[in-house]
Image (tube, rainbow, N blue to C red):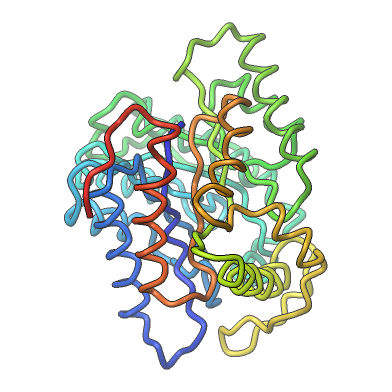
Length: 346
């Protein structure tokens, strides 16, 4: 099982400065590269201070310039917010500049606040995503592409430069619904998913849907993969664990405000914290926050289920130094139990 660090830029105060926020993320990427993590992942979100990254491909290029081995994964790019005729070329250039380390995670978008302010109603996002995905795949695999669809109509054109890898970088589908996971896997896509703050049964349903599709396809290991994203952090004591769980509980109060059916209360770019609907004890049991042994114990079932990669989201309002320490502790104490690769010294 491989591990990734999610560079989910959190911007709790405008006084902190966007430059410091992104430097924190770069520090995490450099450390993850040195310690042998498989990848870092980059969100795409606009107009708000949670998961704040309006330019994921630009950030991917910057990370590649400062690291040597990390894969750089988008988690996720919101296709309905982009014109695929422009975006396809940007993907090709980013794949060149990242020297083939780009993994392109794509999705429809789940934050009504940002989607609707860009003129994309949530009830259209699925249709827009489906057509955008078809257009993107066509532009990355074919020359002289023309289109006559609902959202795209254009005469023949060719994206330049041409992809350095056939079809462009590997593509991963962001989907939470188990039925959607099944159908996307059957289409040959790698899968990114998360139960968010949901219960363990949802996670089992998501994994079972992926495994069912993979078995029906007769896919070999690596042909399609399942990546799971979880809020995580390391603690040296139960007191420290409770403090970090409390911070995660507060974070979900902001996240749920703008996610899915949340009210979307945002004031001058700052998401208003609302009470988290999940009881703090239940959330603490669900998330990967704990001592080294507790985190290992929570990850063992993931490995037994056959999950290929776990994305660790450690950015939910804690001090930057604490998160760097947690990355190092995870690499030294936890990763060796799930990987044959040696962990390097920080």
